[in-house]
Image 1 (cartoon, rainbow, N blue to C red):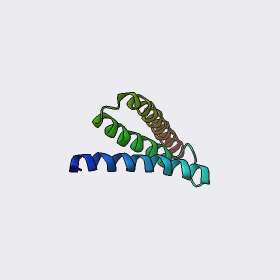
Image 2 (cartoon, rainbow, N blue to C red):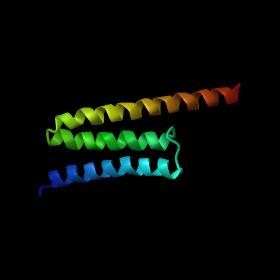
Image 3 (cartoon, rainbow, N blue to C red):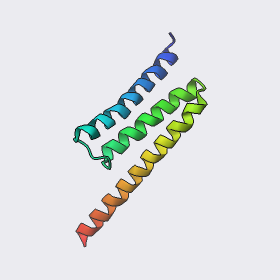
Image 4 (cartoon, one colour):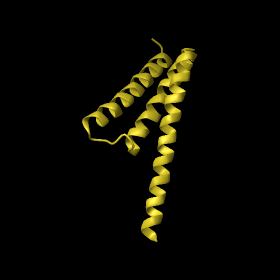
Length: 92
């Protein structure tokens, strides 16, 4: 196994672990499904898996993970807007 192959395999495994870790933490009640870390785990994990899938030309699966990453990034955007609103509200 080449170093490049090992790198992409480890990347995909870490991405999968991040996705499952976020899912586990939400189901356990440790995180909220609107928390920063949940959205971050989803976005980072999806992008890692996308890199793996592009490397192996699995383009059909890339579409699913692009949507997953897009939803997670949108969630991060909403989180950032909410934090900005609350900071602004506290200053007033």
